[in-house]
Length: 402
Image (tube, rainbow, N blue to C red):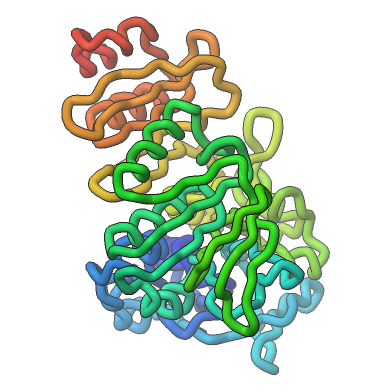
């Protein structure tokens, strides 16, 4: 019976070990995590957990006793210093751990501000793990002044939490608009108006020049010459795949850990899944940063370790919660040349449908679960509706599936 070691106890790692046991693997399974907590959900950290609407126990992906009952050895608070591929050993906390099969589910890490512009000042936070959320949580008092750097989904979610808790919120985005990297102007416009309605000061086309303060951040100077007094800062300027361990071991790196269609790295004894891994996609390579991808890819890799031999074919979907708006995204909008708007059925509701020519690529649905559901089913099936029918409010969405 093979001995499987998994490095990375996030969503992908937890999904993978559970799938291995479900599939009947009877050998030893060890799940190694750098954090002291058992695997937990990360999306609520910037939303429900910060708002105080979700306690720690509800964050856990599975009850702590599950792992012992499933015969999965959890090694938490563990630092992996290296991989010896020839000996098939992992070095951690001064000891070696042998493996027959190794899986890397090391995830991603937030990009931080350089120390040269004050990124190392106290009161400058990122939102990635439980320690981050716990460190910034006490700062969310009414009237506190927060600067959010970055107008992507993480930054906007943090802005929504801060505004709901009565903070004075300024968000700066150096690109010409928020969500520029991931969404159409129509979606940017929707969320800009949403945040403005809740008192958030959004400044687009404006970068951070430097943070001010002696030890603790007290202010910021922006690229337009303006200055702000701030009590703390949240940085949401993207994430990078955690591939240093794989790179040091000599594995192929290409926008993360490069794997084949089944999830194998350049070493056939080592696999990878989740945020850290890039896989073949439409003649190139793709790396997805999302919970659904972490789960689906990890389960596919677990199946393939057991001999399934199936290629991973993503069916991308994402979500974001801001105020009373639930955004659901189906598909990938890369390459779109046309956006079709469909009006919503209630307040703060609409959907935007991305087309490349006549081909449907993706749907952004705000408080429109039916539009999301129909769009996702069409995309997953490789079908495209008539754009004019989508835009026509008289069209029954379900009819698009016929």
